Length: 264
View (tube, rainbow, N blue to C red):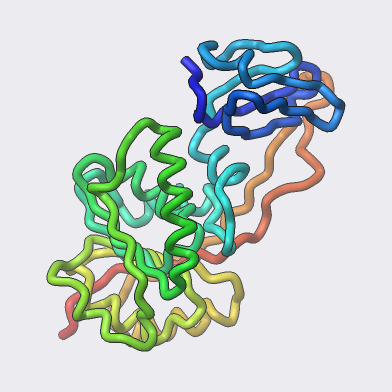
């Protein structure tokens, strides 16, 4: 049942391509581009799936939240990439994961959903403003899921490039995700923080960064290096005119994964 403060997904009855994510607040009236109006008092105490005036009311998915509600102060790792990373890194509800860097918290949210209830995420960012924004985004997601991820998360304001990361931890991690362009020194440091046979995942936007990363991974004690790029094309659900949408989510990042091996 919908209550005040919940995030809802609104879909127009006569235009299924128009969707909105809004927080339910008493006294607030939502108006769309066609001047369809919805008073949020009319939504409170309704069940998800209800039709109110010209709107279908649904509960947002994790993908909806990340793409259409999460407050961005940085580029994000898109759901098509983050979901694939979960599988490649073998992350489960008992994993210990290191994330460099936090950014807006999009990847952190996907990780926490997978790590709950017994796993743990340590997410690092040198920008305190990003940390605070990510914390708010994660808190909003906790409210959406009605789950408290506080015991599964550690957010740390730390510059991995200029400081000694080894002083932070007394444990080793099962996997690590790196999303910063200056990867040379970071890869070497991450090697020492990973358990043997653990996987590192690296997100890079440009090809020249990928070429450099391959060289550093090989020289730092990683093997089984793979590079992927995921292109997502959606189709119109119209049985009379079934065809792709004109716009697709193409290149967002190169995804590199590699396994740590013991040096010999």
